[in-house]
Length: 157
Image (cartoon, rainbow, N blue to C red):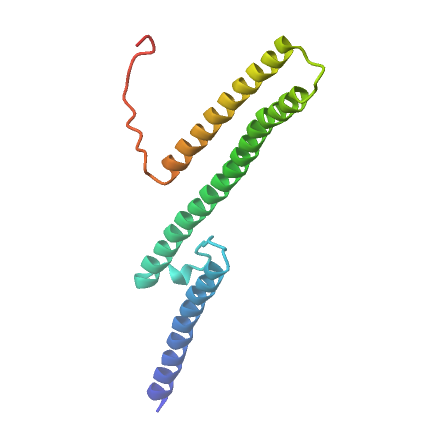
């Protein structure tokens, strides 16, 4: 009878230990779902058998996801900076064109002054065209329509 009771107690303790291991893994997976990818094995009872393999894999997955998350955040910030820079670069020639066209409407301008403002307008139009072309190429690079093939070369070449 005592052996049966000891066996029952042992089974209960073993079950509770296994259950705690499952709870530890479930707790991490729930954290993972919320965006917390850090996993550190805190308990020594998780450092054996299949649980060691599971927890090591969870740590690796967490590190990989954290790295991806950081890269996405950095890329998002760079994209914001790029959009801000592009909008600023586009505003300058547009403003210059507006001023040139407004001045061209002034009837008191000489023919030489009109030609000068027309020439400035042409230059600003070329700048806009160049900026739009650059923006189009950046867009094509992002969409993998254009592929860059870097090659090693000397600086003098």
